[in-house]
Structures are given as C-alpha cells and as structure tokens.
Amino acid sequence: MATIMTEKPERRSVGEAHHEGVKEQIAADNQRAYEGLEELAQLTRDVARLGPAEGDRRPFYVAWGLLAAAERQAAAIVLLHRKGLGHEAAPNRRALLEHMAQIEWLADDGADAVDAMNRALQQSQKKLRDAADAAGMAYDPEIADLVAGAVIPSNSAEQFNNFTPLFKRLSDVFLAVWRAETQLAHPTLTAAQCFFDDSARDTVTLYSEPVYRQGVESPIERSPFIAFVVMWSAMQAFNQLLPGQLWSDELQQIAAEGGIDDSWTASVQ
Image 1: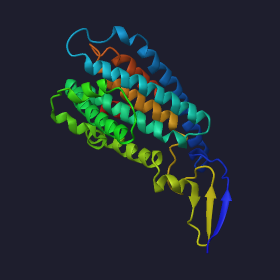
Image 2 (image 1 turned 180 degrees about the vertical axis):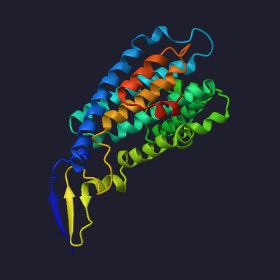
Image 3 (image 1 turned 180 degrees about the horizontal axis):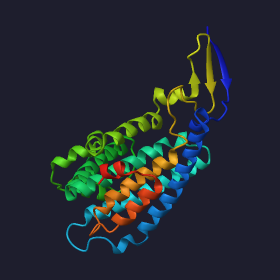
Image 4 (image 1 turned 30 degrees about the horizontal axis):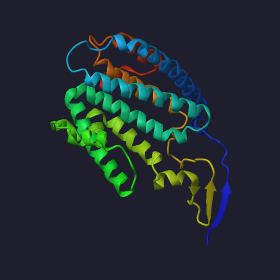
C-alpha cells in the first residue's frame, strides 16, 4: 500500500527551474505585456467614431462586443497573475483565445459569420428553454418565441461555430494552445494531476498548490505575455473591420515594442 503525504510545495517558476537569465527575460516580457495591454486599451477609447458608416454593420457591432469582453478577460488574467493565481487563469486564457478567434471569423466572413452565430443562438436558446421547461421554471415566452420563429439563412460558415475547425483555419499554434488551456480549464485528469504526484513507487504526494510534472512547461509565469499576444491578435483582426484599417501603424509599433516579432505579425495579417 502506498504512503500518502500531503505537502505545500515551494512556489517555483519556470525561471527558477532554469537559468537566472530566463527568469529575468520572463519578467521583462511581462513588463512589456503590461505596457502593451495598456496601449491596446488606449486604441479602443474612440472606437465609436471609427466604425463603418454604411453597409451591413452587424459584424462590426458583434466584433466590438467580443473585443470589449476580451479586454476584460485580459485584465482578469493580469490580476490573477499578480495574485499568484496564474494557474487558475486557464479558463480566462481559453476564453480570451475563443473571443479572438471569433473576431477573426467576423473579419473574414462578415455577415455570414453573424448569421451562423444567430443560428447557433437559436439552437442554444432552444436547449435552454427545454431545460427550463423540464425544471418547471417560469419565464416570459415572448422573447423565446421570437428567437425560435426567426428565419435565418444557413451558410457554409456555420462549421466555424465549433472552435476546432475555427482554430484549424486560424493557426496551428493557436489550436495547440487552446487545446492545452482546455485541459487545465476543465475538470480533466491533466488538471487533477497538477495536485498530486504518484510517480514514486511507494509514496503518493498530495499538493495544495499546482505543481507541473518534470519537463512540462508551466503557463503560469508567462500568463500576462500570453494575454498580450492574444489580445493584440484580437485587435489586429478587429482592425480589418475598421474603414481604412486605421489601427495598422499603431498595432505594428505596439508589436515591435512588446516583443511580438515580425514572423508572428505576418501570420495573423
């Protein structure tokens, strides 16, 4: 029978596990990320006067709603990091990735993406209504009836209501990061194994704080920089919906100052 031990591990970071220079580089990257996120936020201050004046403006409105929500997700990631809860920010990092991906979708497919989102909303609202009915919950059926009765044309963009094909179209890197964050954001074996070690023959050690297995890089220390890169990508996508792509110069400058290199910026143009 294995002996069970309970320990509170010493807080360790990727920098402490490697050369001191790596630790300093991570700190420098995160500092640039803080500054970059603030500069990105400044760009959105006058967004109301920058939107399209004619045509189907639904993609712009929906993308703005997602961008505003993404900005708050990035702020939550930074706050959790500063409180020593970078591991627990996995759901926020995952949500930020998903917001960015859908903004890119709106920039690429425009009105078709909005129609696809509306058809997905119809389906989700039906499931919600069915669940409420099964639970005997009272609600005003008027809005639910309007949603159910709306006639929305179908189109090929509907496949991207599922995030796997959406991320596959967007970037292999983003797909891999999204899958990794999903493992930590959901109640998976991967998430559970951050809190115990059963690698020894006769001892199982339980932890009250997350510990990553040897050779597995932790996202904890780079959480602010991850938020910065993903938020920059969301802004780059939203810029495609602005007449004249007015943020282009500022975004390139923010990328250069923040350590987002040319190969990365080219991949998300």
